[in-house]
Amino acid sequence: MAILKPEDFLDKHVNVPCVLAGHGPSLEKDLEKIQHLQSKGELVRFSVNNWFHYFRLPPTYYTLCNDYWTVKFTQPIVKLAQNDPGGCPIKAVFYCDALDPIDLDFVRNNCPVDTVDYVPYDQRHHGGEACDPYDESCCPHAKLRDSIQQIVAKKVGHNELRTLYVSSIFMAYYFAVIMGCNPIYFAGVDLDWGVDGYAKNLRGTKWEGPNKSKPGCSNVVADLSPDAPSFDTIVKDSIKHVVDIAKAANIQVYNLNPNSWYGIMPHAELP
Image (cartoon, rainbow, N blue to C red; front, side, top):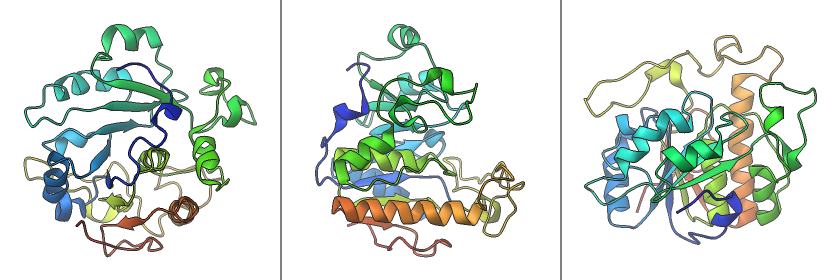
């Protein structure tokens, strides 16, 4: 185990089913089956942020993409997961170092790199080029490398380089495509925090979302820039992007929620 690049995971799980697990209410329907299939080695699971409030088993891959759930903040969580009695420790942590510019020496000296791969990636500086206009919060950390979107584009031939999303789960999708996972299931990716909050946690209680993002909400309510497209537009365009990449890659992508408000992605049940 080591500090690796996204390209090191190319075709790692060709035609292996995977689940991208969000924490929306519809996760409750499939949570137990996901863990059962994962424990049997029949699928890989990507999770984000505070997965440990919902799942007993750690994810196969832990995907981070914000400045709150950082490498340093999640370090003790990852260490605990490596002692998982269910025998499903985390294999790798993917983190966006444009948002979390942690020093690699910290990772080497304080994170469990002996048992977990740590994988920095970039989702905004395509080809290592700074933003236009220059952004002091992220551009100093741009490096001469392909963004995660460019790596996917080179693999599947779909060259739309989106950078505007409302969930870290889309970064997990990119990694699943890079690995060749097929089919890919979205679980609990309801993108509707303002209506039913989150799924029940392990204590059987529910939390409301930190904002009230929901279909038709204003950008202010959704914590988006007033100059950005609407919340609805960002979500629907993102899901269409997911489906377009799947078609280009000749893989199947499904939503486990049959009643998602944004549609576009076909529904299926886990086998």
